[in-house]
Image: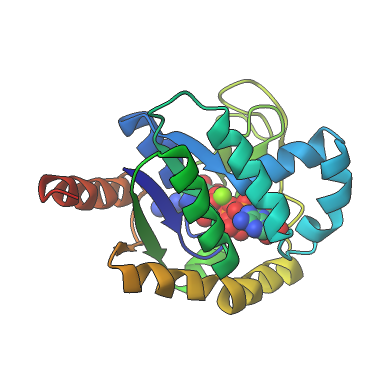
Length: 220
Ligand code: AP5
Ligand code: MG
């Protein structure tokens, strides 16, 4: 079974993705991380999408779907994926269906994490990420041992270019307009499960895991 983590910017999708992948062996497929890696490496794709990502708007459906398709195609058979930040539009929902069909990688389950806006903004305002290995920190909840330095690899920590107030507002607006309908699409298929996003990362992880295990025990 493949998993989609769904929810507004800063709700904790990436944090939960790392915990679930460690526990369950999924391949973490974050379109945001793939796009930021392209920007960091100055690839032609990175040059093309840099301004869009920095403005908090969505990259074209075709571009992100191509990234996802090539990741899925190049993965070993029987890989189970955790999609983080994809699909984000109704067109991407159709694209993902087609990718899953053609690769025969199995069924889908979606978890939507909910949290109030005030806490989301607080989490985003405290986020730092390692430029080298991508590990995410937070000055309020997961501070690095040494300021500006990654605990994992010693790399330099930096704010994300899209974590500034006006871009956060735009990401929230885009989420409401284009991504909320995705949740409704999965709800109407009966595969969307809501998760309360309050608590420590470990508490939220246990919530998701508990739900996942009870669905699997009931036969999917
Ligand atoms: P993307 O990278 O997907 O960003 P996002 O959806 O805005 O979500 P974030 O990564 O900001 O937040 P998160 O939910 O992962 O939270 P995190 O775990 O880091 O997309 C970025 C951009 O790329 C888009 O705007 C768009 O331009 C483009 N893009 C990406 N996918 C696309 C697509 N499919 N189509 C088109 N364009 C696309 O947590 C946030 C902070 O809170 C961290 O510091 C963390 O340590 C902390 N934290 C987490 N959990 C807790 C907790 N329980 N308690 C306290 N602190 C916590
Ligand atoms: Mg993320």
